Length: 285
Image (tube, rainbow, N blue to C red; front, side):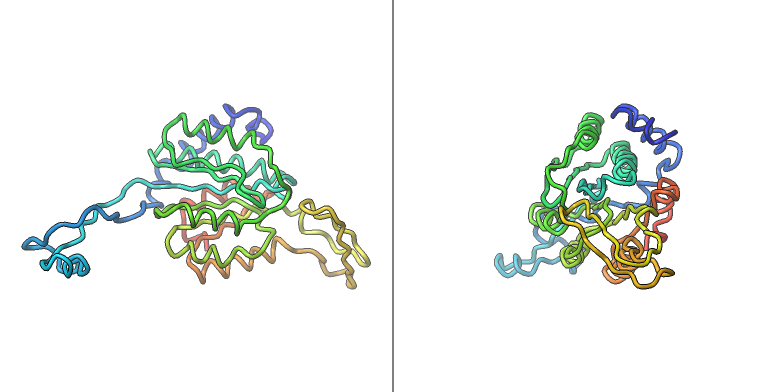
């Protein structure tokens, strides 16, 4: 199906997402992402047979008799989706591809009865939703992203991540869809990776890999108002390979900090690559 046909309406997009999830994923989503592990349940007096490693020494000292912390297994996933809606994402069909991948991910969470929330950001968090589940929440969040009109052209992922870190205490699965044409977010991302499972989906186009031209070259940044002039001395050397530089940088940081990175070229079957990254998580790094 052509991308323009998929994006005719929210209903078309939702139907396409359902077909893709039923055909391609068929339960693999749940097998890859296990949930947030053990959640604290209560503190109670120590009983014979309790594991001594569960003793809460602070409470024991206060009450002058042993107490243990009891945990229960948390099976439900909390999925947070960060969508970069800045101006650089509105070219070369990056935003359209993002919407399709977002719909598939959202439908997977809905089908598995997980809770999901969507954050749309530019240089600020423009819209965010609380954690919800069910078909109505799926359609509402999908509709919100489909019709979203960004208030700013610029990007600041770091500000969005700091807000997320301040408001969200629970361990979550965090998906970030962006072209990552910005900096100063790595420190916050590394701190979040210690608590949350993070996946970066890097959308880029081959049309951003400009051909070799010798001389002074004007470049217009869609997120800025001024023109940049670049001097390229060698004709046989590409003067702008930013997506490739970002890809190499994020691959190295993913290995170092323990988050997952997936490179999605718009012209090279991004849906297939996305499916592979979910079904075979070892490919993400």
